Length: 133
Image (cartoon, rainbow, N blue to C red):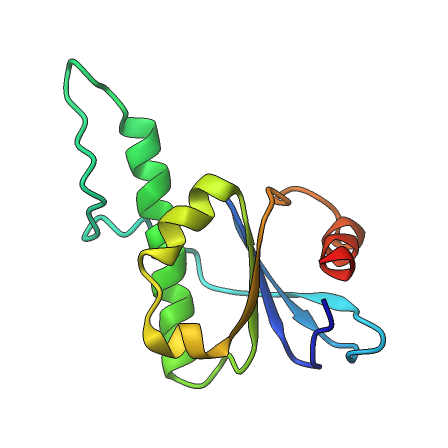
């Protein structure tokens, strides 16, 4: 996948979130860390799943809420024009949850998605996955 200079790459799962910026160009991608505010789980979002004593799934609910919180952050950045191009790399389960919360402004700047869990991997691994996409 060729990324224009300045493209933001979000790498996430249900517990971790990292942002990178392509400081290279389309011919030579070079990702650099981007500092961001801590993402809070968005408890205001409901995915329709409920945990009970018969079906305790508090862990999955908190991961889903964290994924929704990531998208809330990205939506805000897209709405304020801080993101012009975006690629999201997320664990398949987290990506499915995230998609439910995309604002149309986020969808407009989204260049692509990769359903892979690359949190905790090196920048070289992320760049390699993007090159192969």
